Length: 63
Image (cartoon, rainbow, N blue to C red; front, side, top):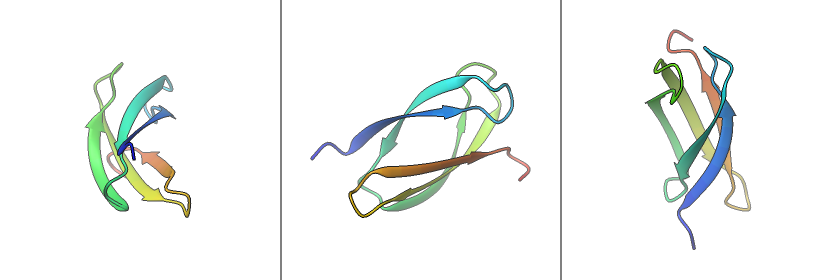
């Protein structure tokens, strides 16, 4: 089983679509990763659905 899953998200700051790798070996996680375009910190909230696919929610650092 591949524990890294590629997802596309939209930066909540600059609006650019960026590609991120999600570690699906952890069923639920919250972390901060900088945008690859504008370098601002994005809050990531990740959970896995019943099929093991990552559901990713992103927000501003202040939210």
